[in-house]
Image (tube, rainbow over all chains, first blue to last red; front, top):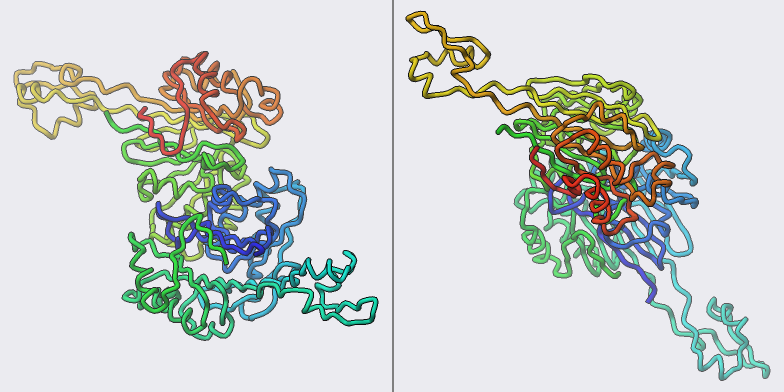
Length: 304
Length: 304
C-alpha cells in the first residue's frame, strides 16, 4: 500500500503547556509531505519526527491565530540556511500575504528559493491544490476569524498488473502502462483481452479531512462524508459547551457526533484546552459516541 | 543571599536539532525576570522551567537573526491571552521597531497591555536600562549583522542590621532604614554609634555578562572584567576556527581565553553548532584553558 499517513507535530491550543506544542501536522502521501498549520516549534517537531525538510513543498494554514502559524517564519528561515532551492508554496487566508512578505523581506533576504503565496478563500469548499498525488480542498469552518479546514483526497492509483498473464500473453513491457491506464490487449490472433482481466484494481483512493478551529458545524458532514480519517478539534468537554460556543470551539462529544453522522472510518481529536490535565476524559467522551476515536499526541503517526 | 540566577531556555545555534532549542535565557534578580533573546520555543521553555510570565517585564534582543527572536511574537501573544495588563519592554536593535509593530498590529490587536520598544545602539557600551534591582549595559559585539551583548550589574544591597545591637541601644524601628542607608545613631547621652558598627556589609553586588553572537573579540575584557558569570558563545571547536571566522562566531578555546584574561569567576558556553553531536568536546577544550567552565543546556539553572 502506498504511503498515506498523518504525523501530529503539535496538538495543543492557544496557551502553551508543558504537554503540547501548538498546532501543526504533516501528511505524507507517497513520500511527498504536506504541512497543515505551523505553530511555534513545528520545525523542531519535524526534526523529532524525522520528517525530511526537503520533501515538504506545500504548507496549508487554516487561520491566522498565532498558535497555527507562528512557526512558519522559523521553518522558512531554516530552509534558507539549509540551502533549499525548490519553491515553497504557502496556502493561507489572503490577509496573510503582505505580512508574510514583510517577514520574508526582513528575515530571509537573499535566500535561494521562492516562497509562493496562494490565497485561500475560507468561505468556499473548493479545490485549492492538485498534483499527481493528491487533490486538496478547502472546508469552510466557523471560528472567531476567517478559517478553513482541508480535505486531502489521494489520487486514484493505477491498477496492479498480473505478471503471470503478461508472461502468458507475451505482452511487451512498453505496453504495460497503457494496460494499467485502461487499454485492452489484442493478441496476434486478434483476440481481445480486456485490461480488467490483466490487472487487479488498486486500493480505493483514501481521504483525510482536517477541521480546526471551528464551532460545531453539523453541515460539515457533506464535505467529510466517509473519509478514512477525520481530524477534528475537541478543545472542550461537553460540560464546558457554553465556553466552547463562546470561543467558537467544539466539544469532544460534538466532534464524535459529526464523525458518526459522516460515516468516517476513524476520528482523531486534538487542539486540547490547557485546562484538562488528563485528556483521557476527552477521549472517553468522544468514544461514547464514536468508538473509533484516538487522541492526538505529539509525534503520533497514523497510517490512513 | 538575594536571588540572582540564570536559567538557560535554549542554547542551540541557527539550525534546529533535537538536542536544543534556539537561544533564550532568563535572569532572575530578586524574583524580577529579565529575558535575553527569545528564540522559537522560548515561551514553552519558560513553562518547563516554571518561570512566571507575570514576573517578566523586560526582554533584551541581541540581534535580529531568527534564532534569537522568532519566539517573541508567540510570547507576547500568550501574554495577551493570559490577560496581562503590565507594560512589556522590548530592548532591541532599532531596525526591529517597525517589524515588531507590524506583528503586534496583525496578531495582537486588542491586547490589554502596551509593548514599549526601546532601540538599542549596538555600537556603544552604554547603560540601557536601570531599575531598583539592576543596571543593564550594552556590550558591542561583532557579528554578521548589528549585535550586542548585555551586562547585568546587580544594584548594591543595603547592609544587614545587627539585631542585638539595635536592642542593646533601644533604637526605634523607624530608624533602621536610616541606619542601613548610612546614618549614625546618637544615644540619649549624646554618644555617636557609627552605622558601620550597627550593620554588617551586604554581599558585594554581582554581575553577569552575555556575549552572543560574536567573533572572538579580546577587547571585550574591558567590559566583562571580573564578572561573576560570563556566558559566551562557543559555536565551534578551535579546529574549525576558519569556519568560526567566516561566520563571525567564536571557538570554545577563544571563549575560555577571554574568560581567563577577564578574570571572570565562571564561564558558561553555549550556542553550539549542530555539527557536534557530543558537546563535551567543546567543554573539554574550554576547560583546558579555563577550568571553571560549564556547558549550557536547556533548563539549566546557574546561581550567580
